[in-house]
Image 1: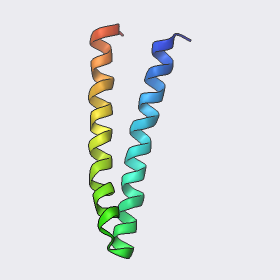
Image 2: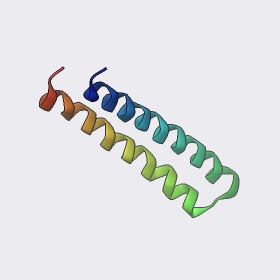
Image 3: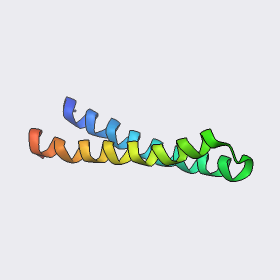
Amino acid sequence: MRLITAHRILIIAGIAFFLLYALIEARAYVRTGSGSALAQAIVSPLVSVGFWLYYRSLGKRWGR
């Protein structure tokens, strides 16, 4: 396995993690009304989008 392949797998895992984390925090916000849970539920998908954009840029730099 080449290093770029492992890197792509880790980026995809990060995207999945932050989407799952956003759902967990959204549930926590609904149950508790905590402002920090709401903030994390909003920021987590944004981080996931950032990872997705980074993943897309890898194809331009490294080829696919």
